Length: 432
Image (cartoon, rainbow, N blue to C red; front, side, top):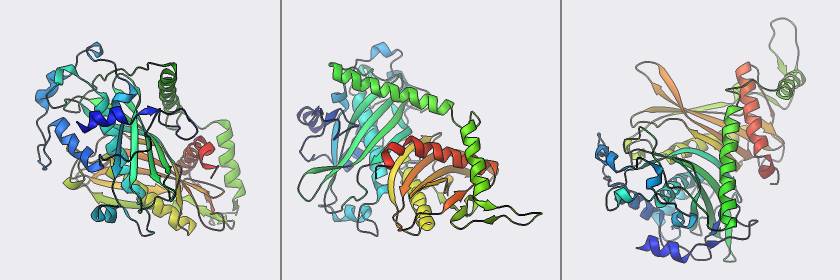
């Protein structure tokens, strides 16, 4: 009952695009009573799954017949239908506060990533309305496909105030959904201060997570709503173009080739024979700045579909990226922007997952860190990439960090890819 009542009371159109860019619906001034723990419990109710771990998982095969065979079977939905607002009550729950606090007395960013992933999934299920499954467990498996971007408005998240998450579905395709999220917190004057804006992309799958499933179309009643939804469509087109133009599919352009040549010729002193290259002061080899960590994925890190929770993987990737920058810049860094977190394939319980972080690109005081997560199979020596992350940090050191130098073709491609990601988000980060 709360979900319906809350959705009717809180949402209102946000006309001030300068204050909340990501959301069409403003969260208002009220603090929600729905907590993130409530949302997690809601998942079990919606999906009809058990909270207890089972090696076989829940039997969802029988739900296949509840999926629509045609998208026309699904009613159109509006942004207000998926809108939600929830709180992380760190001020009233000391145990919860201990989980969120870091060594500097502020909130752990990695924990927030876990909540963002949960919240985005919840908005997906609020959007989906399937007449065939009314009163039955939801047959959809909504999984994270991509984190388009996470922009940090504030780098200091206090543990002295509760944290609010608000969001809604902002665009849908045939089986994909974009979710816009705002994270804010009250300042010392009692006003809401934006902390983070995020765009997630989820895909709807069948109960066994083996194929795509149709989702309800998203419509707008006003020209303003239609324009906002159209912006989501433009973002989706841009994502496709960016993927097609990636260095994995096309060679670097002439400008990028020249950049690498000038970088190599200008940052080291050439020597004759087989002697080692002597670097100029203020230059570091890329190969010297790679950090790895290996984790065994236990059942406690699982999601509702008996796979490893995407938010947990995001947290681990962020923390190794943060550690890499900390070591490189010799000062505590600030996270500025995250983009293009790709979820290529699910990670199974019991997997060995390795996170590889490296310094990919440095410009002024900004340091871009790509992180690759790959699953290792010791029995066959196979490894497969499951996730790719892109993090941009701002060094807090008094002196600018060293310039990074790639020395192989692979490192040069890593450098150029990191540079592309940094430049793409440059309008956001260079204002800081």
